[in-house]
Image (cartoon, rainbow, N blue to C red):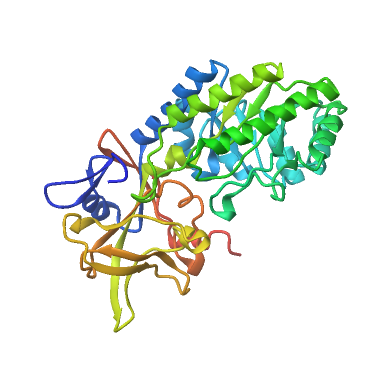
Length: 431
């Protein structure tokens, strides 16, 4: 199996986090999001331990909320003594409702509205990660109005082109995110920021992209950022205290994806950064990472019930399930690969090729093409693995379909974290 929390039991059923998925499907219905709380905590500690070991006590791990955000998840992250990366007022509100202090919250985004900025400052956000000059001016204005000095990082684009999905490649010069180093605009922005009265520039942030397996990308990005830090020190006399090197490593969606040793990779990055800092004669900044996908990705699984099985003679066969792009739009968006299994036939020979599709009135509503599975029939339970990240958080009500519940599993016991939406929820805001 692609993850150690997935097994097959003596009944031939797929198990997740020690529980029979067929039993869970019967208890809660489908579609159903499952999340393994123990795996989430394990992943948190892998990052925390590695950063502390290789970068010292000041290093900090932030959870990237966009991967999955709901109250119980924020409670777990807070319990693990991690900060949070938020990208909207809605994520801030959810964190507040979960009882999370915003002191160690970092507010990202390329277009924070005046409302977002006011709301975040009123609720004592720890840091803004500032994308552009217009945003910087808006934060300065609101900070002045509220009579505070607001801490910020500047988001910079180091010009790194990583080989990942184009839609999640964020480190290029022409990205919609951040201010480019290569064009000279980043230097001008630093100089401008240092002249503002109600802003405290704490450091810099960069994010090269998502689903990255190779540490060379982090090394290249860190080199560009550290060179910039040294250049700014020389020209402007400002030396950064904080360097946020961005998100975490990729996760395994299929057997073809490599197994990542996160500890070993962070060690490699730390050795490079420490050597580079010494060469440049600059102080070692506080290092921050903000993993999201690699915290929750392999903690998730989605269960569906097969509705129809249809073969077009001479062409292909379809397995249609009771969910689809409304609870997992990633194939429609990125053609994202997934491992798909029939949970109640986990030991049977996979000798039929199917396109697994959803129920939406949309030809692009596909979960995965060309999946080898046992012969499927109505009522079978289909499991899609590694769906903890960007599934619940990207879910929609397209076709007026209600969103599935989230069931957490801890110590082989299940509990409801997010209830299934009702029809009443669909019309709650209608007038």
